[in-house]
Length: 332
Ligand code: KG4
Ligand code: ZN
Image 1: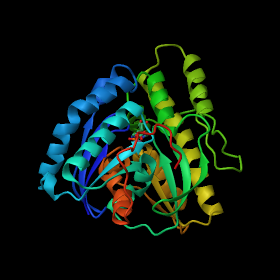
Image 2 (image 1 turned 180 degrees about the horizontal axis):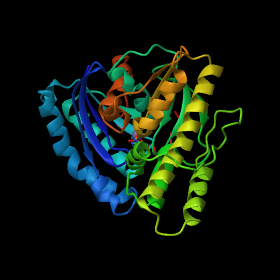
Image 3 (image 1 turned 45 degrees about the vertical axis):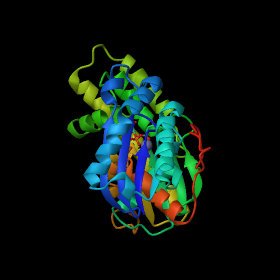
Image 4 (image 1 turned 30 degrees about the horizontal axis):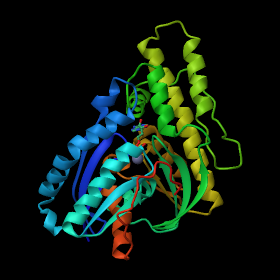
């Protein structure tokens, strides 16, 4: 099917045209980072307003870049949750109106299912696999047996991994979003003598906690003479990333081993992290476990990923009705 896919769950407005849930004809993203950076985080009301301003021209551009017209489309896919309600509503309302005008089906998709299935835009990964969704709102491990078939194995009991990156970056005065900035510093600096805790590493379950790690970083920073030198900032960033990456990789691999899964798909914005990618590669070399990462553009929020599961559902006769609502909190 030739689908228009839309994503507006947080601070990116995104539109894509995807054929058969595989072939990306266009995939464009309008980022709101400039809008929220001055506040150090996403301001929901501002996010909704910006989505509303850009969604029409963005869709026009996505169609144009794909070399098609609206009349060629066979369906519309949209993120309907979880996320910021007002932000989600912009995409959901647009999708309904667009589908109604064209008399084509539309479907609401779970944002985390989309992140986990994004890998299919690049390569086939046989089921079952372990899906690790690591983003600004999620740190969840699933056993994935197919599209629509997810069993939660473990999750964060407090902050999401990306949220911890963002908050630590803020403590260090680095700006927003913090993940990429910490990643860059961790490439340049080592952690020196600093060693932060690895929360829940030795627990036998598959849950994560990042709040204690964040507090440990804050206490460490507060114990230093202010302002911190560039090198101190770099070392703290590096030590934090090492702790976060250690926990994420060790617990994900343990969950895969327990479930006897030989394939792991790591998805979501934090999957862009170079330290995380490297550590997974080091830990699994020669182990028989394959770890898959979508390319960075498909790890972070984008609309092409929304089309993967949507194509499957729509081509199997599933549709959303015009009563589809935005759902801010929605377990997968
Ligand atoms: O998936 P995503 O784009 O949006 C959500 O669904 O949340 O993830 C955004 C999160 C942010 O917290 C951002 O700081 C983090 O992903 N992130 C990173 C990196 N790039 C983005 N975290 C660590 N290292 C990165 N390179
Ligand atoms: Zn996301």
